[in-house]
Amino acid sequence: MKVLVVDDDLVLQNLFLHHLKNMGLEDILTAQSGEESVQKAEEHQPAVAFMDINLLTQMDGIEAAKFIKEKSPHTQIVFVSANEAPSLMERASAVENLGFLNKPYNPELIEQYIKMVKMRLRHLNRNR
Picture 1 (cartoon, helix red, strand yellow):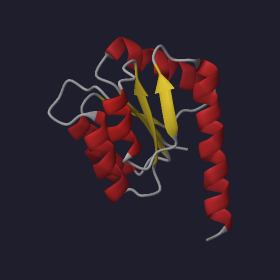
Picture 2 (tube, helix red, strand yellow):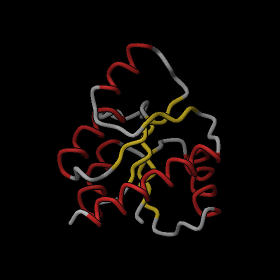
Picture 3 (spheres, helix red, strand yellow):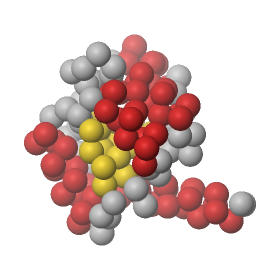
């Protein structure tokens, strides 16, 4: 299962990667900008993208997620942020997503999202 981790903070990105690798996942892509995440999602079609909302680039995580869902509709989006402002949450809810993960990362919640994506993949493969 391919996983895309999008975060412009390399320390937090590496911490997230550490958690995913501890779960036995190896096909992990990373991006630091919205633009890079869209390109990688289109090229690699990940099963899930963990999208930091507040990217310090022209395209934030919500805008990038919109493009990813257009180009790769089966990619599940999990938004990630330390900011829970109502206006931000409202914008994020306008994009089809699996959920929201607060920073700092909780490894158990990451694992729950990975399990949900695996179940959706099994269901999708059965219906093909």
